[in-house]
Image 1: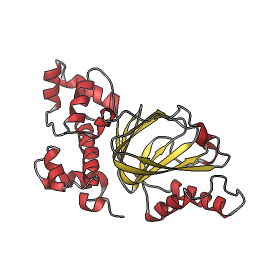
Image 2: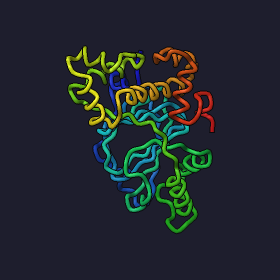
Image 3: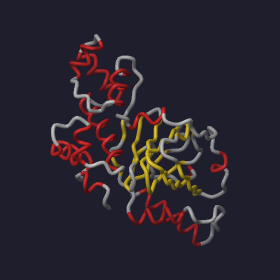
Length: 269
């Protein structure tokens, strides 16, 4: 089983400079870029002086920072604050559209990475924005359009698609195993026995390192892997079985509780 954590080994990588000077130097509050990221490709760790709203109209992205992993299926976007080192991976060919927003105009926008739901209206606005001239008239209609676009971004609802990660030596073996095999149903007691630790110690470490209990964290691993599979067209029954759920209904119940919709409805807007 190839989990979403595993993209790192499937590509030779595509490097950007640590500081994306091309975008950062554009003398406008909002700059844009179109990208096509082939299946399995990694855009290696880099950052921008600007904030970035990264939207994919097709394919599934994984964005990784030192704070964790965000999975971004179609009809969602990831918000990346200024100067945040991040790496982007693709499952399926990703058709990306990015808005780069100068720090002077991001008041009211999130201060941390997050995944947001893109409404049909915002989707059309993003697609239009990337066709606007780079040096648009700051006193003209394109500038007014960008202002309205920023208002739409401020109102975006966040979606819980974040997985905190840790390299703590007592938790790393669990992380590695579940990233490759999210169907593993082993209890924390079972892990404690295998690692020669105590359940109490691992419980404390999970809360300290991830802000979640072990059960919550394992469910998030499964949820994010489920999203990548569902977005690729894998049947719900197969996803439920592959991720270790006792039944399709149990998986659907978990999914709806976490994201507010059943798997069949999640990608409909």
